[in-house]
Image 1: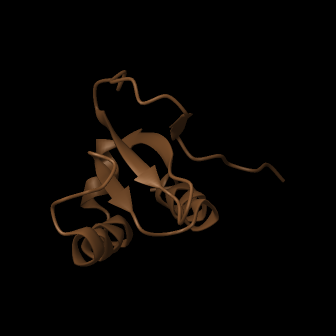
Image 2: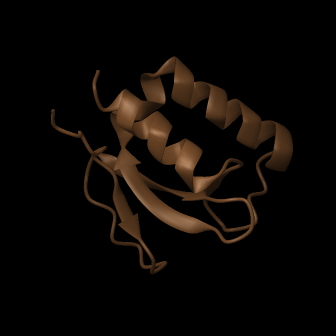
Image 3: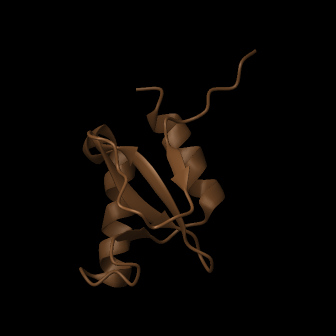
Length: 86
């Protein structure tokens, strides 16, 4: 049985190197990590729920300067791996 890894690119730098068709988000409860994920995730209801939570917590003033997702890194990776199957 194979393990499918999500098509996300974890970046530790804050450089603006985002491939076409992707966008950067910051994830984590205390220590924020930057992930670059496909734009196609935006159309998925599960990801839209995360964005709604981010809007409720941060509004449009995200502390990292980009979209900050208010969940643990483990939850985010689990969700994105499920979205990658679609």
